[in-house]
Amino acid sequence: MTDANTTTLIEDATPPAEGPDGALRLLDVDGAPPGTFGELEPASPPLIDGEGRVRLSFSRVDAYDNCPRRFRYAYVDKLPGKPGPHLSFGTSIHAALEDFYDRKLPACPSEEDLLGFLYARWDSSGFAALPRQEQLAFYRHAQDVLRRFHRRVAPSYRLPAATEAWFELPIGFEATVVGSIDRVDVDDDGRFHVVDYKTNRKVKNRERVAGSLQLAIYALACRHLFGVLPATVSLDFVVPGVMITVPLEDLDLEAARDVVLATAAAVREERYEPTPNRLCDWCDFRALCPAWEGGAPDELLGPAVEEAQRLRRRLEREVRTLRELEAGVARIADELATDDRPPAHR
Image (cartoon, rainbow, N blue to C red; front, side, top):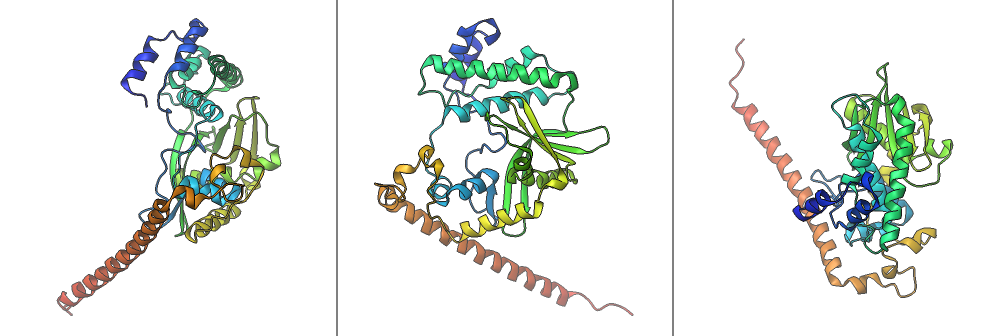
């Protein structure tokens, strides 16, 4: 969503089809991100929901798997990360593709329409630190990606069952997994197919796609939303223009549930030890991490974080106590209602 000033700037800009200057002006717009797509998260929801379940997403599970300490900084301490160009690029592509498929009429939008969706939904938040020519290069690259996508899918275009299908999937009594599926298709035989877009350049092989935790979660979410498991799941690597599809039977849904439950248990136990790895160089919180020289997170963050954690734990305990009291009151009310009933006539 953009504010009034941002909307005015976009309306005053020349559409990108009319020349590169339009793209340059568009890239100057300082609007808020248009939304969240696939593994990209909205404003961070509470870590423990109202029913006492740990609230996870694929992004959160993946973050914990990569480094529990990073998970803590991002989702417990809620320290802000830095927007980056690749994240904004992916957000913009996802948004344009959502508009491409979220239609009322079955006719395929034109290539010009698709580029217009990109123009309207361009997220400039991650490009502010880049020189103007680099910003423009990202925008033109996104245009090229979508032109190739249009050529690939236009001949077989059909409206999907859903785009950006939001789900809140309970996993046992311990966790809820939230997220949105980029696209859910239904074929002529009524079979469902889950598609997730990826904007990285490297294509995963079939074995890695079959082992994708994200796709396994989305398959379970498909059943939760539509009452049926998908026949296939796919990763569509839109930059190189390759889609890898695997049948449902290649997924290990039980293993996915186990990973989610194990992550939920670790979060409840507050296990947030750092795990140094090759991703540390790109971590927004490296300067705080005790695994690296100079890192002293608790001292740098101050006592406020520890106090917030203490209050959060206290709140969770009080919520559990309240639920137990409510259950007790309900039982007593049922017993009183039973005692007040007149005897049955024989």
